[in-house]
Amino acid sequence: MERVTSEIIIKVHELFKDRKLTLSVAESCTGGLICHYITSLPGASAFFRGGIVSYSDDIKKNIIGVTPETIERFGVVSAETACEMAERVRLISSTDFSLSATGNLGPDVLEKKERGLVYIAACRKDRTVSRELRLKGDRERNKEDAALEGLRLLVEIMLEGRDVHFSAG
Image (cartoon, rainbow, N blue to C red):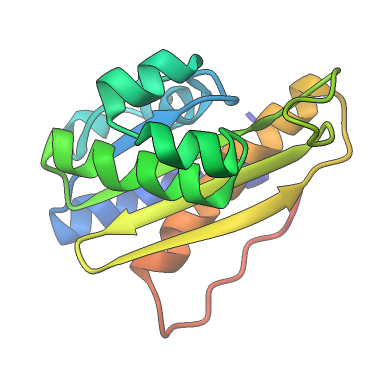
């Protein structure tokens, strides 16, 4: 595992364990990689409740609860869908925080949205924050970058008001 990966995963573990908080994840384009990163270190069971890989629209709507209107109006590759995914999975799993990722890793255009366009969202009880990513690597690199950026966003929302810096790798 590369150093930056270890650094952000260790930070997530430390923050959640120290603060006795819980986490859930809803992933689409990252295909379970965020959950894999979280569980790659021992002790994740102290805070990580679980994740849903919602690769299809049906799972986003019927399991997670993203509204059909959101998908119809903004598409699955959108900040709005990422936010709803994060908000819904937090409610479903009764966690303090949640994280989501949805996007187009390529190679084809999806919903007229270019390869590498990804939206991540982190949610807590009183706030949901999303971020647009425009990734330029190949499919595998984009998946890794989206997962790591999601974890960085999660740490940022946990530490709002403090300076948080992680190298981009």
